[in-house]
Length: 313
Length: 238
Image 1 (cartoon, rainbow over the protein chains, first blue to last red):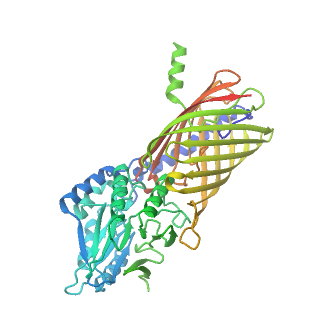
Image 2: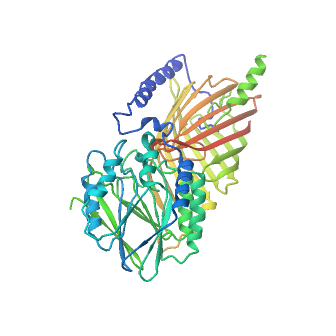
Image 3: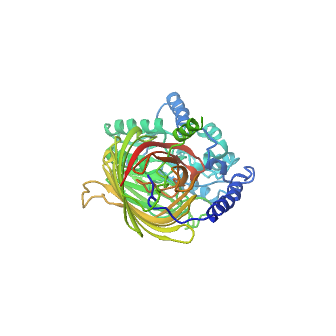
């Protein structure tokens, strides 16, 4: 129990006054935190105490309902060696310059059948249409067929926006396969970590799906989500990630199921860490005001290599 | 009637690792304690814990505390705290040096954490702030492989605690928020809310109850319940 065990410590009547002063000091801060007007702020401050979208288990149920109806996607690569474009934290609001540059590069790459967005697609509410339109207006060579897979970031469910996300993207937890001409299959799993925890149902699904995938003859196994696993620096200051128990459970899951690559964002700062056969990558933010916006291009063949591409190059 | 109300309050309110309200009349005493607890979190689901602890007042200016936790979720923790302290005209200043080792056998991971914090405690308030670092990695690392330890070099440690009665009271209740308790130093952005209480049956025996609630995603601005911990224990002081 106590940390301050031990002998009685000195006191006098001032102690109570100090306590009251402390509480009075804290009260205005709490008031300021909770008084922000959701119409004028990008941050859902009330979410600090209770998230405004359905919690992880309900979002997972919604996603699985769609997955069951829709089935599993199998994408076709035109060559044994193909590229995957990965971006995160575009935070699209009134400006989308970097995101548009990313899409333009992706569409122009003939060997890239797939892009993955790791969450925080938009910055606040009311920008979904603007985000989706960007995909439509990005220049694309005639005949180029490509797909972008997305998952949720914490910004995407502020102000109850899970409804809008579902309307546009339907699911936040799913897996799919990329098939090459020779019949090799690469396994990709995308999960929802928008609230810093998976929830019991999604974690159970992750355990069983990864165990199943380990038993299949996939060439590569890759996991994608929004939240990063480690706090090796405080690059973004206030970004939280998983509780420690969840961190260790995920590390063990990935190590024991032969996951080769864990792609995440959220931290806005590039980080590459290898542990027990898995490479954990935090991709740079691509939002317009980012200091050095960049995305990742992974080249998938018999092995996986990757490069970071700066959009200010 | 008054008696009944007291027992109802004591039973309802019970306690947390927060409950610092350790004080006896006179000098500090050695203490041994044992508690049993139930925990739930969204990763391990339901599990039970057994905790053993000791408190050693080395002299007027130093105290030592040691704790061990065994969990049915198959993780084990040993922690120690050395606390130099400096009585002031009002309250007491202390420096807390913490070290903890956790074997998360279920995940084949071990973790070591160290921390240093400065605290100030009065009859009704205890405030503590400091920093620490953590290393963790797999057991049996294979060198010349990608195995390695992960270093989290800077953890801000904090704890604010309020008591409803003076420390010398026979019973007390405390509420706390912080990212540290006797067994863990969580990441800065994972606060733990604690509520606890104790009752001194006589000079030697104390009973205590504690509870903790750990939300997650507060600084994702998407808070959700993550974990709860309940403990009941006895302490013998001599």
